[in-house]
Length: 313
Ligand SMILES: [Fe+2]
Image 1 (cartoon, rainbow, N blue to C red):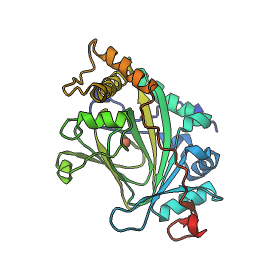
Image 2 (image 1 turned 30 degrees about the horizontal axis):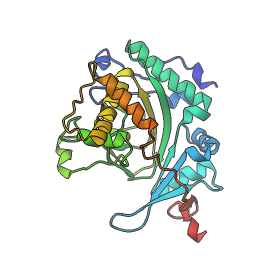
Image 3 (image 1 turned 120 degrees about the vertical axis):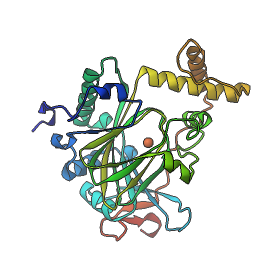
Image 4 (image 1 turned 90 degrees about the horizontal axis):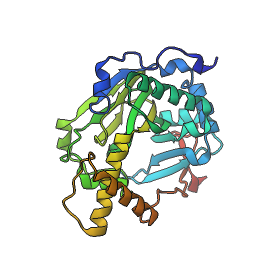
């Protein structure tokens, strides 16, 4: 069956107020991704096998009790289904990236989802849309961070708790946003335990989707079960203007030592800032995204922790 023959909406419980809330408040909605047939274990097993090597992120942690170091893995000879089994019993994160670039049926789904949003929110014009799949072990976590583009998280299997923090300078200093944009840091941000008193926690179950305001910091904690989630990202003109302002401010601060910079993205001052952002990029002052060359482990579904360290292999 062609999954795109589905003529029901992907979002099952859209209400008129969601148009006003979207992008400004955290909102949890019901979705029908499971009905596409694209996210069964078998379909995902095949997707893992089709995934270009460079787009398959596999991470685990060392065994040190305090501050364990990050390990990078590869599929090796494992099948996709074996990889899911290995993740189910280990401490492994799999990130299947940029699926729309190499799997047309998922690109069609991504476009259907955003067409549906646009039909419900006239003026919500999106570009640079991205779809990825995250498969992660029981109890895995994602540390406190913020993202630079519009985000949504769609739960397929398992349960995870997502903490969303206020979009405020108290929880994320604009200079930290600049650092993220200028790629001077991994996207982990300074975090204090008391932040949680001001967070909203959502338990995300299969069939639920969560979206939150731009730059709202968040962290994620899996329940004690395998988690399969879909991530979607998008850009809009307001998101791009906001990026340009923060990026431009970061460049100005570094280049000229300016301290007091506005983060308002309305008004004419956006454009010189956007221009300076482009100049900065041209100058090549950005730290390049990490290219992972080292591989520490291979997937091994027969091993108790789902992996075999390459040094031992
Ligand atoms: Fe995120």
